[in-house]
Length: 398
Image 1 (cartoon, one colour):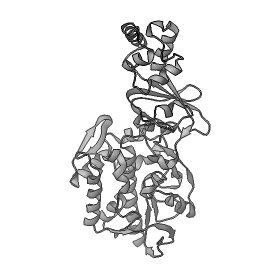
Image 2: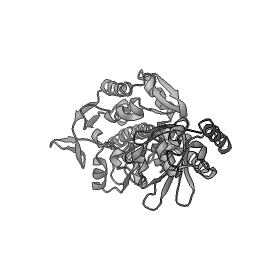
Image 3: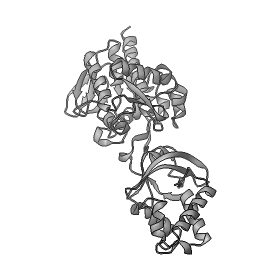
Image 4: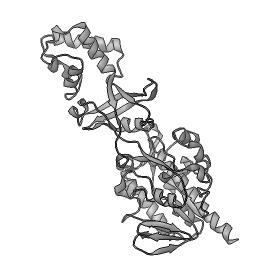
């Protein structure tokens, strides 16, 4: 949509081929339905949030920084607001407002939206699945990666790019839940922990991620905002093993937490441990903590040994969860991998192999952490591709 708008604003005749019945379907699910449009920060800060090929986006982000994106949507009648972590949302908290603004701008610019699935780019035509061909002077491929295939991201762009001679860096899931072999995750299915600190270490015990926030135990392992953010830093499952450690009580250091434990044990001296622990941990977590600390649930608080108390304390501050790998790419928010960026002009997003072919968005081998950065990449590369396509056509006409 951004590529089509950018090209049409420069006077080009534009056709947008959309697989879904309505444009912008994927935007409905961004930011939990609120659409985290961009991040209110500088181009440098956006690049710092892109672990893969951030330098490739230098020109695109200088030309279309977050400030431009904010101004663009506000000029289309969508008031915005900035929340924690500089995340930018529509003031209405409705992704539909962003989609409608883009749709009406496409309409105003007389962009022709055709429902159909592009399956092949052959010379100066785009062939659709239903059999008809669309003649054109330039093509922008912006078909997304492999995540959320129900929205149309089924790898068509990877296949078409590959057929035209482009290298496709193996697509992998990013911003994705994590699988764990630990059976206690299933025991605690549905338990959401807020204001905990998650630390991820690799097999060399190096910290690759640490942040405070919310996570969720599931039947397969871990999910929730913290885990999705952490997964973007866990990129080497084929050769690395990762361990997650949760600080369940980050507001209390060890001596303070130990003093709290002593107080609770003293006040409930005659209680069974599984009853007393309810004051310290959520119900689903209690049996797991006791089992891992090797403390019988029916043990009286006054019988707890110093060693058992120490084991409990360590679990509260360092609750470890083994990780076997990410969930499938279909469950990821974004796809890491895609069209190799060294084969694309970073200023115009034009293919270096096929004149008149342009790429935009998640189809490219660039992806970022959470916080509006991935949509910022979409707007910046989309605008660069749309304007680049018009420039290409104009040069050919001279």
